[in-house]
Amino acid sequence: MFGFDVFVLTLVVLLIIVLFFTLKQVPQGFNFTVERFGRYTRTMKPGLNILLPFIDRVGARLNMMEQVLDVPSQEVITKDNASITADGVTFYQVLDAAQAAYEVSGLENAVLNLTMTNIRTVMGSMDLDQLLSNRDEINARLLSVVDQAVSPWGLKITRIEIKDINPPRDLVEAMGRQMKAEREKRASILEAEGMRQSAILRAEGEKQSQILQAEGRREAAFRDSEAREREAEAEARATTVVSEAIASGDIQAINYFVAGKYVDALQAIASAPNQKVLMLPVEAASVIGSIGGVAEIAREAFGNSNTGGRKGGTRLPDTGQ
Image 1: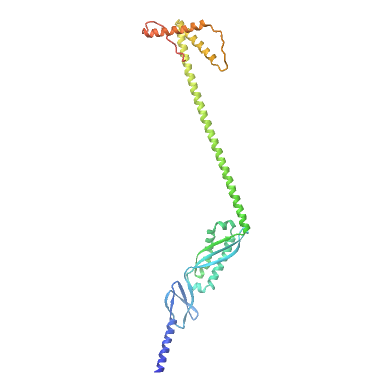
Image 2: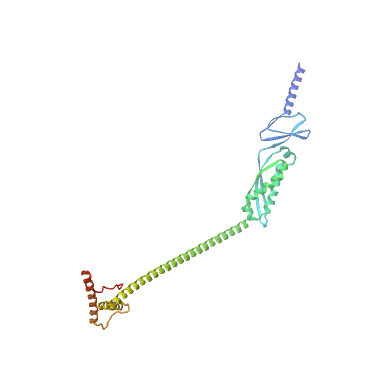
């Protein structure tokens, strides 16, 4: 009985060992490669997998999740011979476990060196100003080149980002002076443009003012001309009426006409600005006679209106005064 117990115990131990080599559990997010006598045969997916004991074995254990790889700082010479320091970060994911395990040795090291080499290549083909202002373009070019290069390895480069671009201190100071000069230049240009616009607006305003003043003078001259024309027409009509009265033998009309002209002349002489004292030898009888003639004309006119025109006479002429 003792020997049989040992046999059963040995058999159980062997069975446990066989099960241990036969059943393999693969965690989520990982893929294991299976090698039979050292040759790749298949890839085990997450979950419980079965192997041929003592024939198949697990080869490479690969992380299929997206991974991050830091790219250390390195010096780069730009196209315009400026020396800068740049670093970055790379995101990649294994798509094919067999290719990632057997197509390249040292996967992370290969991706890192490939990324650093292409950073120097891409950034070295650009000027410093382009590097500082076009990071998106740099990232896109790096992503395209590196992803195409690692495609045979069963990898996918999801993103490459340049973190820092550090020019030398003296170059940074020169760029600061250049930026200050550019801002002062733009400020001077804006100030000159403002003065130019102000001068143009003032000139336009003066032009419009002169135009309006000219139009006002033209309108005033037109009104003055029209007034003089009306006055001349009134004077002409008055002269015509007086002439008709003289032709008809009415002496009172002559006296009225002469008295009006006489009084107008005296008024003009007396109102002249360069005359302070007026001394003229005026015949009072002539003036009184003329005024009397005017009064006689007025009496005849009013008398004719009161009598309904029974007595003939000459009406007061319109002198336009």
